[in-house]
Image: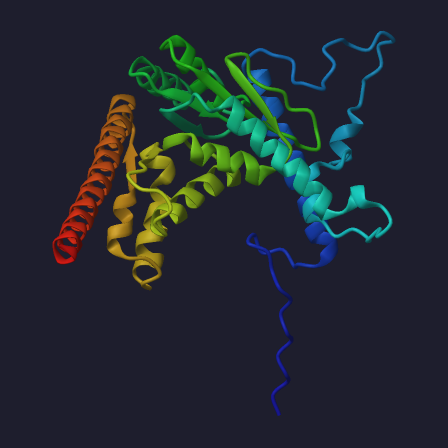
Length: 333
């Protein structure tokens, strides 16, 4: 009688057996990785990372940064909202209804500060991209070209690609916007931001990116970059936004993802072939800027068509009402 096969334990994407302890360890490591990439981006730009001391120890001993070991030194507002916590029915300030007021205030502040941004273009990409990296230089040039055409540049305010885009905005004489997010460590903003807004909640910040952008330029990056990419595609796919260009910069970097989308998602009919046309892939700053500019003009035309159609519908309705009133008047006489 054959021996029963030993049941395999669940594995992570890199083949490691999964359990709650490993998952928590991986979460801590992931957060430490975000912190490290933020710091690496600031260091590559020649700045002391926020929260790091520039001074050497006076007694000659080596200073150990304990904050790296403790990946969650502080509780952010997002964590308070999304994590499980014991209920305190007698403390209203700990409840979700109270947080709604904070969230409303954050939306109001964002809407107020960004109200004058009409032609925003959001840039996303890795925080650790150094100023001598070709992708950094391409981001500067792309943002500069857009700024010269009157577009405002919006980023997450951090180092790397975000810094490059904000720098390009200033070089092109445009408006440079940074939407910073509260993290469990101090991350700071890059020095090329004209308008800086600090957010506690990711979903509020993500709303600002979509609301005040007419398109996205997405450089090589990690999970955060992919998050913004696929949220935009979902909003386009579901008809929430239209004529919204999504430009992937860096053909080599995005090739594997696009190949998977074509060979898996498309082949298994999870998406349609037309949806592949929602993405533009390029290595040329001018081409990226041209795609954004063309989409902006298409948005203007689409808006004009909607206004014209609404006006024509109103005129037709007024004519029908006038005709009906005339018929009623003749009948009364």
